[in-house]
Image 1: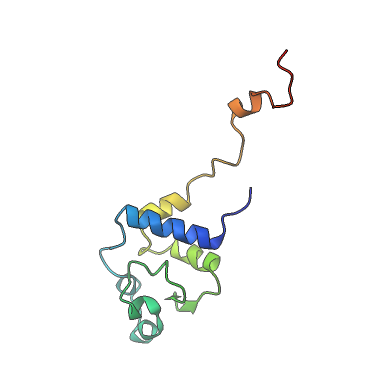
Image 2 (image 1 turned 30 degrees about the vertical axis):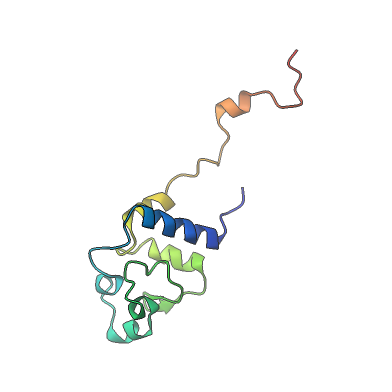
Length: 115
């Protein structure tokens, strides 16, 4: 199977968070992570007052670093206390596509004779 494209993964996480109404954590990310005034001034999550969507916003400065792409960023976000728990569990769920099921393996193919 192919990996999920970053833009699709990002949108799925956002829509899941929106549907589950978990976009408002108890504290914004800059409080949870104790960001300095200097980091906050450079970070778009602070600029847009979107401390519950920091994981969704490109260009955020997590752990004092600007991340080069979504894959790098989301790996750090998954370790963060500000990242919604439901999204952590969703992203860490086992991939059910990794092995065919027993039923699928035992079904005749379209080219198999049924006689």
